[in-house]
Image (cartoon, rainbow, N blue to C red):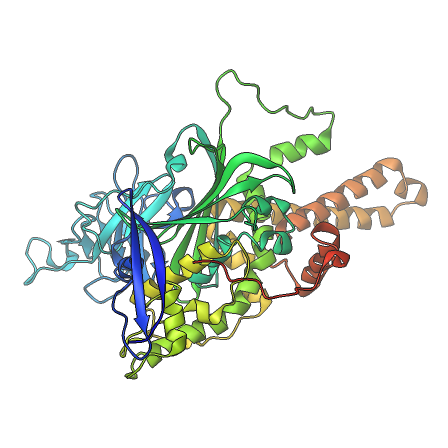
Length: 557
């Protein structure tokens, strides 16, 4: 046997350090499988908790549809302490959508097609209007699934017992901590959850896509390496830590930490030695389906301690600062800023998608072709800790597709290993191959804020409606004023009061129209090019670019 090398994989389980040694031989199958690959491949997507919406965005006492892993669910929030309930969105009678039904006084969900009513806990049929006083010939049940309301989010667990479900994992303890304020945002993005998770956990793109130097606090360098820890018990968790960087020469004395907890939770923050943080950013990259994600996020800020000085408030005689301070406390303003932020790189991720998903599909289809040998490329991939080759199931390996080079990418390497092993087990992943072969949609579709955010966020939709009404009213009043002034003599027409009224109406019309526009498509190609033109000024001057003299070493897995 000709050994080509060995790879060591460091895994933390129950506080113990385990070193798995993988020895490979050319032309032979792997003699052992990395411990993490076994855990990753065994990940069950159906028995996990997924947030599907912020509770404040959901109707109370009325079913609504939520999509998860290419399956539709009917979800109902109930008043008081009554737990929410969820069903697969099909009535067992004639397969109509239960999300089009209603909630009865008894707390049952009733299909609006024929009136069949179902219990929210067990899914049992409680009433058939056409058979009142009699029993059906056979039991009839809707598919009830576990549902919970925790931390302001509505959660679904498709594979858990709806009568006695497990607890929602406390992946973001700050979310239920009353000492933190929470600013909630939501947006649907036509990008696969795997690519969106990679994007959020990538510290290197922040300065280039968003022109934010703060991302450097999470970026590693040769002098500040990134430490990646993998925990597999009791749940899989991937964590990256790096010394938080304040400037080229000073650090904050904090550790910048990014953590991924499958299936969809990402938490980042700068923490002290006790693990505490005053600001935490949480993301839930919900896999709606192939090539579709719902991004729920929360900015969690610690409240000032009782008696501690608060941030100074701008006085009313400084109207610009006063209005800005008041506006930042409004959720719709924060959501508009979040949409600006997401628009800066969402289309770039969408351009990745056809290539990555097509490669994944090709690997899946190749798995149906038996293999009789292991290639040198397979051995190199296994040395990096990814799935060992098999004559019957070649893995899709992201390290073959990507060229990792920066010091901040070890976390992405490990995340890719998880996806390589776990994503093939996603329900309905390969049932419609055309979804994985779909081309990149136009920019106007990828970045359409109205369908992706405004339509699913009642607060933003209400602001857009009110701003549109104000814009229309001011436009009508301005036109009426212009027509009336055209009929009077010039001395009255140009009176200061009339001019002031015209200026005020025009200003209100302009400002209201700008607000309405923020809820629609914004990031056109021209705006993107203007954003690029500011890179030398805000990020790095072209004069400071230096040629790479030698290929950089790939990040250590």
